[in-house]
Image 1 (cartoon, helix red, strand yellow):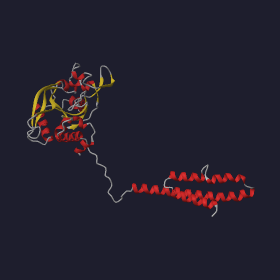
Image 2 (cartoon, helix red, strand yellow):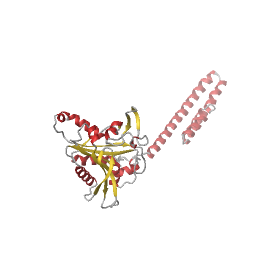
Image 3 (spheres, one colour):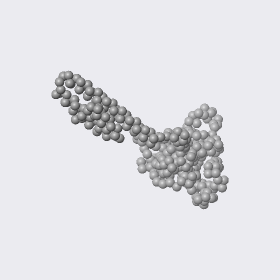
Image 4 (cartoon, one colour):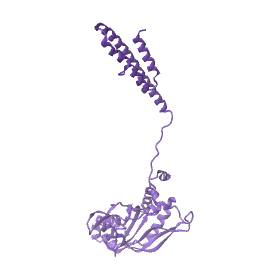
Length: 350
């Protein structure tokens, strides 16, 4: 075996001993690098004759090609081994069942809203939706709320850009503006019958939705949900209000022995007015009176703003907090849990 054959054999043996790409590159440098043995042999050809250069150069090229072929083969072998190791580490058992995604569901307050709509729907109430950015007129003036009322303060209400100084825009503080909005549309629909002295279908509607006030603690949120209700006709009394609210509350809480009381109060848009209190007869809240809403006969000024004659048309309105109803139904004691987005909490209601 001549010197070149021995050199090729040494390179092949050293490449075979290399277990990492870095080791292989170090081994390559000993033979094919700037100071490698093949490179040194090529430099030594300068002292040879023309004939010797031809034969020696050809032999060196053959050896160089053999070393490069061994280097390429070892590189491929290391790459294959690394891939094999990776595949084993990331192996998938295709016989195992797939990872199922958790099914989504409705938010607890949304569940409450749908339940409320279904109960009132069974009593003949329509569902109305209105804008959350409301005008001062619909939110306050049309509801008999005077300009010096505390609710119009910047500290209590979110005012937004748009409108004018005389008629500013705001985030609605309640869904009560839908009383007038829906009634005005209803009256326009039957205006010809009214002008002719004929009657019109009763206005029986609820307006669930988001509302906004500057308030935040364990039982209040700057954004909360409310459901407004309105029943206007020619012979609608406070007795009808008591019957409707009592039936609704007992149905919602699935408790026939639920006790209600209507406590005298004041609201600008109703007269007389009453707070709605409930008392459970069993469970953790047994014996306690809890305020869940406000109600009353619609004020004559509000009836006028609907485009109706208060001497002929009468009715009642009520408003209830849907977040509080959700808290009572599910035993939640902190309103903020509904808005934190904690999947551990929300998944309990699915």
